[in-house]
Image (cartoon, rainbow, N blue to C red; front, side, top):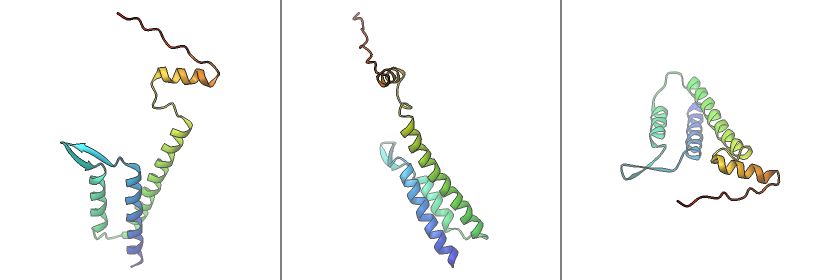
Length: 112
């Protein structure tokens, strides 16, 4: 019975972690669908099954939970220390110039 309480706790932790990492809603065929609904449905079905060796499955679940937490932390650190990842090249050049004390002039655009 102890593994059942551990499985319930693991399920809740995985559920929370998946909710934290995914986009809340995606529009599919003009209907709002939770982005992670298929994964969470599969997760629920996996925990509802009667498994022959629940301890090894719980270990795999723990490993997967740690992987998800590590990926979330990695994304946060990547965004924190590399803020120019999602920028276009012109914006990167402008910000690099500002970092070293140069304000780039605005570019002249010819009217045709």
